[in-house]
Amino acid sequence: MKAGAACISRKRWPSLADSEVPIPAQATPVQLFVTCLVDTLAPQIGEATVAVLEQAGCLVAFPSGQTCCGQPAFNAGFNDEAVVMARHTIDVLDATEGPIVVPSGSCGDMIVHHIPELLADDVAYAARANAVSKRTRELTQFLVDDIESPARVRSEESVAYHPSCHGLRNLDLGTQPEVLLGDIRRADLGDEAEVCCGFGGMFAIKQAAVSGELLTRKLDAIDASGAGVVCGGDLGCLMHLEGGARRRGMDVSFNHIAELIETEGT
Image (cartoon, rainbow, N blue to C red; front, side):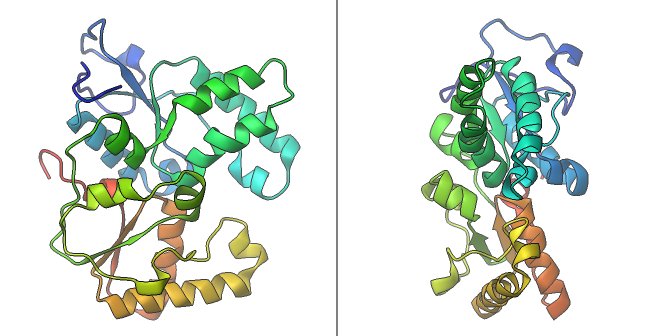
């Protein structure tokens, strides 16, 4: 979908079939894959994502059958279980139309790269998985590259940006978040700017000592930067950082980038 595509705004979360707003024939629906962590622990990020997309002129649908994409099981080596969840995710998303937008680099990476790998030898799913992969976009990627949205982060505080490893290294997200951050006052994390925060899902459990050391380094850099806000594109990283910061007594806010983008009424 290009900038200026004919889309309309509508209420959040229900499926398109539940919308009372007339949908023009030329409208392109955007499917929100909200992720388990957002749905369970931080629904405000999902709401912020919908608000940002609607402000950009998109019609947002929420495929109600979505569950976990299978990433935790895949990362832990439980491939059989991951395949079951991957098939379900493809069943749900392949039945929809338009771009699939994910407010998470890690879940986006799972759908774009790892689900097609898991299902590569599955005659019933391989082609469908590849089709869904090609439609899937991480939020900042979609806003900047696909629709050239004028949306920008607004903050009165100095903001440090933490790029998640999956987004930065697996989805090649770099310039997109920078464009959205615009000309706000930035806090410099120096040599630690692109270093892992130590979360990595199961990594933080299985390699607790290494994870803790990475977290300490990242928090030291945040503290030294004078940042009032740390933002990022993955809730897992943000929760990990915030937990460490709270234990230290640091006075810093942690927000998903969607929460900081200025929309009408904010």
